[in-house]
Image (tube, rainbow over all chains, first blue to last red; front, side):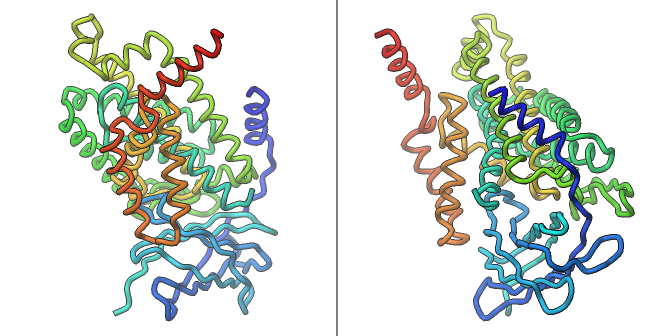
Amino acid sequence: MIRFLAAAALVALVAPAAAQRLAADVDCKPTNHDLVYDCRIALREAKSGTPVSGADVSVGADMPSMPMAHNVKPVKAKPGAAPGEYEARIELEMFGEWALRLDVRGPVRDVIVKKLGFREAR
Amino acid sequence: MDEYALGVLINMGLFSFLALSAYLLLIAGEMSFGQQAFFGVGAYAAGIGTAMWGLPLPVAALGAMVLGATAAWLVGLPTLRLRGLYFAMATLAAAEMFRIAFELVRWQRDVDGEPVGPDGTQGFRGIRWVLEQGIEQAGYAAIVFALLAIVLAALFVAERSRLGATIRMVGEDAELAAVLGVNVQRVKLGVAAVAGALAALGGALYAHHNTYIEPRNFDIMLGVHSLAYGLIGGLGTALGPLAGVAIDIGLLESTRAFQGYRMIVFGGLVAALLIVRPRGLLDETVVNRIAGRLRHRRAR
């Protein structure tokens, strides 16, 4: 038990810094299937605006009013055509407001949360 | 273990703090629909501590716990004079007041050229301490479960002590406890403060896992779930709410095929269990039976 706690404390206090502040624009368009969306993500460095390519990006979603329970299993985004662009297809559980969580790994490390509203097409 | 499974595991750990918070009040005889408010207080306080003031997470979390305990004590002062449904309604109203207050808080500071801090309904982004320390999911899971283990150990010790017996006595028959000389109001206020601190610790860890929080994260749904965990898992031991969390999250994860309808499954489960086992799976009878068998085996 004491070893476990010591290891946890060591991880918390000694691990090196690796994060970089990123920004993203996310645009999700409905597909022919209900609640399935194709999302285009433009990832860039927050300060310089330089596009970030070659990163591993996974896209998950949480409903803000039921965090941790009402969520969508993350999917891996594929690199898009333009630098810093990624594409992912997500399947939601219902319409409404969702907080998209972009987990970025690889050359840079960051987590970006974007809130988007998904409405039923009329 | 893959990143997603680790994320689910961390969520279970985070929910457990809230579940234990609601459980403490349940064994003291009170059903609170408002523990999510102190979870939110902890999330905002710790987020402000690390993201805006540059404090390390352990210090910010400790401050958040003190703030959570104080807030819960202040809410408990008037509401614990009420009983049953009236107390439940009062805690729900108090939690909504906190949520609305979070919506009104706009206080940001420039960090690395970007505004960081609570921005009302737009939420609070950039709670990056964990990322900046390079702590990955496995490391964070270790931290969450190490803290949970400490809390559980403390609860086991407390439950076996005179204090634990007093809390259960107050929960089962407050009038009788008062006749026997127990200061019921003081015991309940103490329990409420500890429960507030526990919820705040969970909130602090949640904010740093998610990096983003917003007022709607702390609405009634979270309160209902936190209460349901104890009622599903059982009120006989502190392991009960944890069993409730494992059953709920396990059920939600295994019924993904039902999409949004899986929440109905959860509601149905709570309703069915409350009818069949009103004090949960690991209720006092089951726990006493298991403890008796263990004692008997040791004696042989």
